[in-house]
Image: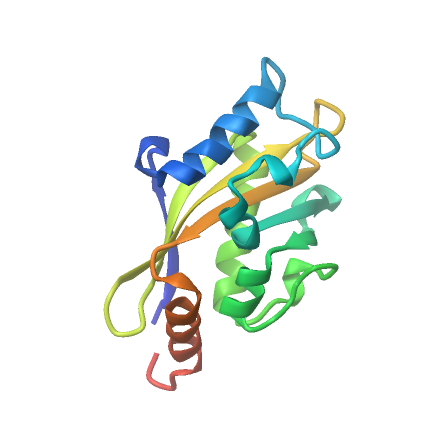
Length: 171
């Protein structure tokens, strides 16, 4: 039984603060493929979203992703620190595979994508709204992806939902 999924949404459906992050990305992008990592300043994002932000380096065209930055609230919710680790090493497998698919899609479409992450502990729960935004250091290839998320239920409740969903023997 599937317990985690992403659903694409319109950018306009993102929470206002996540849209601020998207507007910042667009202001840097101008008429290029994407802004570069050196010019993307995490401190320009709404401060309360930085702990829910991650930045990955694209490894070998998207075969894997190296976590350059993994926000502290993400680490708390998911029960592990992924900074300086490969996404392919993350657990649980079902969640890891959903993240890998979503990131690879950004490389393929070469533009941002807005999503809601839904989790199914017993019934559908919208865990977070997020945007994945590509970065390109050379203007040709996607070299990094920035993800900015807003969790609907706060750290403690989100952590509990994630933990119970992925440790449940029934699902």
